[in-house]
Image (cartoon, rainbow, N blue to C red; front, side, top):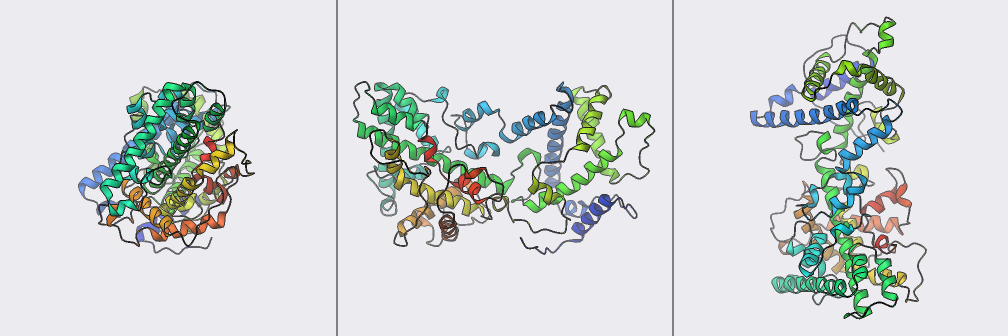
Amino acid sequence: MGEKRINKSPSEIAREADYHKRQHGNQEGFSNKDPRQEKVAKETPRELKNRKNRESKTRSAIMRTDLSLLGGSISFPANLNEYIETLVLSENCGVSNDDKASAIFSPTLKAITDLPIGLLTEKECMLPRALVPSGFSEILRHCRRMISVSGDKSYIAYAVAGWKTCSVDRAAFRKMQVTAQQNALRHLDAHARALAQIEADHPKLFEAILCGRHKTALDLLSQRTPESVLKPHHIRAVIAEHGLIYCLHDLQLIAARAHAAEANPFESLASSTMIQMKPENIANQSRRQAATLNSLLAQYATLSEELGGKLPPEEIPDRESLRSLANQVRYEAKKTGTNLLSHRSQIDDLIRFMRNNPVSKNLTYLAILHQPVSRNGMATSFNAFWFSGLSATQTVSVAILRYLQAEKTIKMLIEERDPRSVRPLREHTAMPAYELSPKAPDTFREAQDLLFMLRQNILHDKDFTTNEESVWERSDREGRPPIKKAAEVLKEWGQREIGADKGSLDDAGRTYYLLDVIPEHRLAY
């Protein structure tokens, strides 16, 4: 990737100079002046107070994590990697591995964006048995939440109107919006009533459908089952519709992750007043923190080193930052009742471990960390950094186009897995490669509508400045560029192969999986 020239302010140049001085041990002319003073001076008293509160909470959260290492009675350094991974998982997902599905499908979740960012990639999670609804009302409520946790009726109705089994199509929304919405919502009601009937007639089949084990559901349907009010072909249609409901849930998760990537992908581990947190900001901050960490590791004297006569350095780089850090450590230790001296041997082991281990095993991160601050050739957003250069709206557009394809191919995917069908199972069990016919303007129009509603309700991207309150008032141009780009990359990627998502950060196969809806996963179990 080519270098990107950036016009830097005097304060930014000063920060870079401080960084390089710390890296090379050149402290001549070092100043204790906080390089953030110029920025802080421009803030209002209220903004300054809010920023300080956020930074304080962030430091406290990190410090409590550090102190929990000491109180965790773990053996250093043998189990440290495992312990750190557990802490990262806890911060990233907010729950343990066993509780992921319960958190994602929780009926008390207020908004999909309330989920920790680590859960937003967990599309393979299926509804736990403990959360399976019972009876028409609960089933309907669950289906609506699977489509839109926030319960946006316009979006729910518009999504359902795309099902081939629905009596109203999406084109009707622009002609008779209220009637079309009512008819689409009635169709979702009918879906829930059919599920309630299946629950009464065949509880195991019902559970398999709701839990996303659609291969099991098809197998049960092909067997000799208890007498059912609904005919087998009707139940297969219900399975197909619920497969699309799961795909719409995939779409929710993808849009929420795109939102988190723009706002703050590090959540409580980072504090910022920016509308959009950019990779280069985090990279530059990480370099400064790495310089401070290296300084601390060099200055610290273990007990054996102290007995051997190691003396502290005469000049301490970034003395003010270290003094502030020391005060924070003392404060948190006192608040938690931690006697730091009693943990001296553990701290010594931790220091030795950190001296002999890299900060991260991620080669991409390490490469960025060791670049000079002035060399910024990075992606402009975390969506672009994670997803092969695509913006937030482009990533969501990829998912939308694949969902619209799922509406057209779900019946074929069901037939491939149905024991009574003669259709052979394809080599690649994911949806076929995306093909957009130039004679299908309806697809683009529907994609624009869905993108508009997702931007309004989930994505909230900084470029969405439209004054139209309703999707039906949007301009014909609104959303077309990102959808066109999404169609181009899908054509370039071709067929998604199962397992290709295990690649590196810059691998297109990984991006494809993360941005795709995955009906094949529900049809594999």
